[in-house]
Length: 144
Image 1 (tube, rainbow, N blue to C red):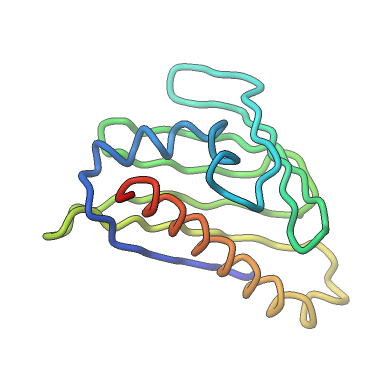
Image 2 (image 1 turned 90 degrees about the vertical axis):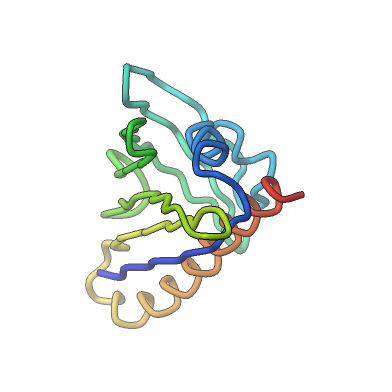
């Protein structure tokens, strides 16, 4: 199962970044690969969101459960339905001298064992590139 972890420093306080991360339905406004994110259900500290992404012309859809720990400004997510067998991870915000380090983790499984050995390295690179693109978009939004 591929695992991707990307980090990026942002010259901004955690308290300014966290609301941006929580506002997932607005991600398509500044993340080019995302077509839509729709909130299906919202509770006190969770949402169920429906995602549609375009990765190199391939449409990928999933529904995820997002859990928010506001006190620690931490978000965890996991796919509950969708195109991948497994898709989960977390957003971690850590205070650093120049602002905040954003860490995004993605743990996923394509779900086709016979071709996993061939596809996993390609998908891992795609997920890493896409994750870095997301962090860069957030950095640009916060610092720009």
